[in-house]
Length: 156
Image (cartoon, rainbow, N blue to C red; front, top):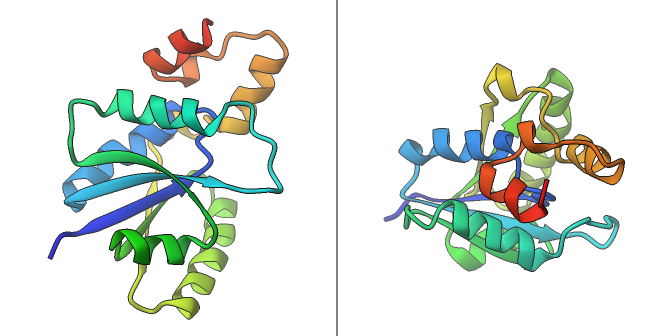
């Protein structure tokens, strides 16, 4: 049985923090699906297609990582793709409190799916897509927070 993991998020845009979590999770799983969740309450800056392209370009060299776009409950998507693990990155204690609430709800809905938390490298603690979007909207240089391919495609 393969250890398939879903790393859900908006990835708007994909940051160095996201890449850090994916890279450090690779030894733990046979396959990581980076799931771009569509959320009606969020207004993303980049299209789902653009975000999917970034993920697939960044990991074109590694068949264990694939991007996907999904809608609905994360646990339902896990069942659809055969994932028994949900990966979440934690930067601060406040992230853990929020993420644990979601993990508890997911566990209540499906006890066979386990949430795995990885803490981000300290150098990526301040990297958040929300901050990157604010920098971009205001004409700033967000390249220190982004993988080179992502920064180049945004034309920073």
